[in-house]
Length: 147
Image (tube, rainbow, N blue to C red; front, side, top):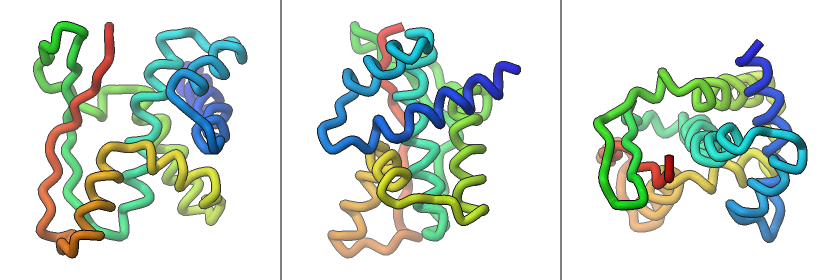
């Protein structure tokens, strides 16, 4: 049941990421107004773009890191954590893969969500600068999350 709740909440969030004036705060406010718990809203904002970015870039055959670290308000980093153990990331990845595989990916929404991803930004910039995708080595995701 929790996985279904995550999927529904993520699906609700997607158009809010794609709004032309969207900010983390505006997406967060929309999720809270919808009745989503603040902790889940934060996790959706943190992990959904990464999942969608990875699906958007999957044709590049990049080696994505399997871990992430959390940086707290004091600038301290946690030990590495597995993305596969983060249920919101997993649900967002499942949804993104489904949308892409079922040919239901809508660029005006789903690409915009993906572009929120730090990984997508770095890869996009590297491609503009002429780097070969196979030569890119992505670093572990650092999440600025005040938990």
